[in-house]
Each structure stands twice: as C-alpha cells, then as structure tokens.
Amino acid sequence: MGLAVFVGCTFIAFGPAFALFILTVAVDPLRIIILVAGSFFWLVSVLLGSLVWFVGVQLSDRGNPSLQSGLLVFGAAVSVLLQEAFRFANYKLLKKADQGLASISEDGRSPISLQQMAYVSGLAFGLISGAFSGVNILTDSLGPGIVGIHGDSPHFFITSAFLTMALVLLHTFWGVIFFDACERGKWLAGMGVVVSHLVTSALTFLCPWYETSLVPIYLLTAGTAAWAFSTAGGSVRTLQRCFTCKQKIDDRVVVYSALQAPSED
Image (tube, rainbow, N blue to C red; front, side, top):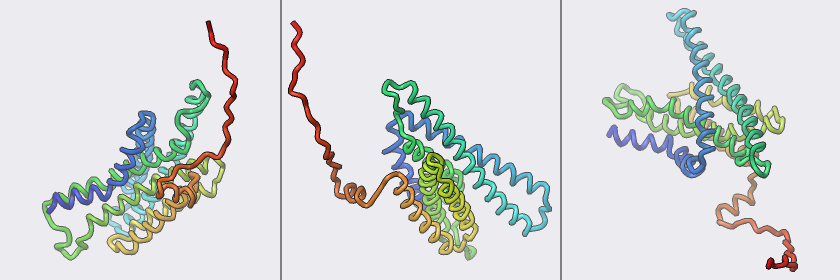
C-alpha cells in the first residue's frame, strides 16, 4: 500500500512538470543550462531564508510556542521575498546572456527568446521548489505507519501531492509574468507576482483544513495560468487553433522573380 501511495503521489506532484521538461526543455542543451542556473538561484534564496529563520529561532525564547509560530510565518515571508529577489537577479543574468548570445551569432539574433528563458527559469524554480517541499513527504509515504490512525486526515499525502503540483505550475507562470514585467517596465505586474506568491505561502498555513487552502490555491493557479498565457501572447484564437490542430496560414503574398541568373560556362 505504501508503494502504491508513493508512486501515485509522485506522478501527481511531478507528472506535469516532468512532461514539460521532457517535451520542451530536454531537447535543447541551452534550455537545460538555463534550468540548472534557475535551480541554483532558487537554492541560494532558500539557503538565505533558512539562515534568517535559524538565527531568529536561536535568539528567541524557544519555550514560547506563539513566538515560534510567528517566527515561522516571518521566515516564510522572508523566503518568498528572497525567492522573488533572486528571480529578478536571474532575469538580469539571463538578459546579459541573451545580449551576449546575440552579439556572437551570425544573424545578430539570440538562439533563444527571452520568453523561452522566462518559461524555463520559472520551471526550474518550480521543480526545485517542489522537490524540496515534496521529497520528505513522499519518502514517509513508503511507511511504516498509516496516516490518520490517531484521528488525523487520511488525505495528507494526496493533498500534499496536489499542493506540490500547484506550486510547481505557479512558479512556472510567475516566471513568465515576472520576466515580462521586468522587460516592459510593468512594475505593478511584478508586484502582483510577489503578492500572489505571499498569498499562496500564507494559504499553506491553513493546513490541515485542506478545503480552505487547496481550493483557493488552485483557483489562484488557474487565474495565474490565464495571466501568463495572455502575457505570452496567447488568445482565444490561438487556443482554437491548438485544439483543432490548425496551423496559422500566412496571408502575405510572395512574388518570385522570373529572371534567372546567367549560367556559368
């Protein structure tokens, strides 16, 4: 039973992200490099956030449970802000890399667009974030023991898997929106990403009342997905072409010259 729960929850948590990685990232070495770089930036941000929380715990009264709960909330907020700060640093680095790639290319254009960089970077943040938040839970699902034997919710593992999947997707969408906001100077959109990240983090503290945490998070995920889709240039028409498998017909007229170059003797 433990193995079945482990396999099922693993595919729920990381199935969509793994599919995105295989289909859109693994085929391009440059995207893999960007994925690794994004993961490194996220790891550094979490390291600094953990250090802030650890120092706060060491300097506080450990016998005060309300104070420790407050420090946990404070640490989560600091971690979110650091993640977004390092997302911005990642954007600046990739922007410089994009300019460098364009300068050495033959046609003066970068082999990868900034939107593609934003998507891969967001996916990197999501994958490493999901791995850190879900691996320990998935390991515990192998047993021994049964969740809920002491009156707790028996849906802990599957709920955690769905929560991890939502966070992975949210980071991907946040990356697309945030990079576009930095590129176009839309600072309100960038602040919207930070606020939605803070709200998502706050909603996780409502567990084990899963209905009050998981449902709003998935509503936020759906709204953020639509926002990122629109930011990337998507529309209802592009969705229709996608689901009907129709390609865009170029209505431009191309005129070919009837003149031929003289043949060489």
